Image 1 (cartoon, rainbow, N blue to C red):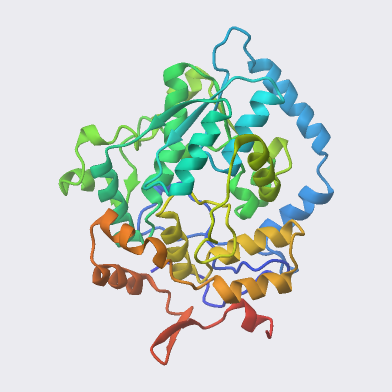
Image 2 (image 1 turned 90 degrees about the vertical axis):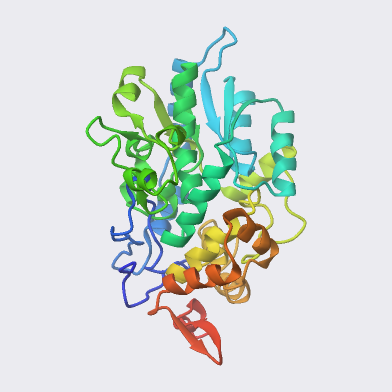
Length: 402
């Protein structure tokens, strides 16, 4: 179904495999399109590790910060108006970006939040702490009945329950920027840090295809595995329900001269450092328990649905949350590859039972429906059943004789 490489290969530096999906333009992603996956060099090193090497040893970060200072000087206002937008929900990264813009660089950011599907308790606490540290906020909550339906069909049709959230996350901030006539947006890291094309990391701007459309293709977009036309025909949505999901006409972006930047282009992006910064300056706190499926306590902890996003990645691509966390920490020299393999072996295939009933209730399906969808998308070249239990055929610890 996903048309993945049949022979599994692991990066020789981190733990990701050639099954890892690259970032995609979700509003153009339908069921029939083939997924592009992580590229490797001739030396067996993945693109993410290749860029990490450049980031750690070749990029002049002082020069990059000078570029940032020049950019901010162009947009900074001294009349009390907002001069930039920072999207986020009070996680470590949005805390870092917004706080450093305001308190180090003298900007006046407006924070914009596309509501999590279901806030966790610690996520809501961190969101409030973020605003308490000195930020105005526009909080956008889509029609929850519609959003739950979209999440349900995204799970059943794509095994991608986070897709409607990701679409809104990309589109909402530019729409608010246009409404308030704020010409500058800063997201956190470029997804290319973790894969995609190496050269994408050297473009500070977000590709407008993520949130815009031309006049000719304005209605040619997809949500939850359905086209806009199908969503209307199936009575899942009406024309009035697309406001926070539909792409922006590209000419509006061109006319407004809105620019959407990645902060990771200008400042060396280290998630662990962002965590310490957010904890010190924004009252950010980790969860009391480690995240199910991994060993961390501070990354992506605001949404109950998040665990199922990573679990479905495990089912489809054979790599779970511990793989993502450990690989990133290997690249940043926080742990060794051997330590990462042990962590992946312990946690990667763990089932996210903590919010399982919440998830079933949220998308209104039974446990039987859940497992039917899981088995429908379980990649047969990655999984085998032994003594009634599903196991990965080629886990990273087997590849490394551990």
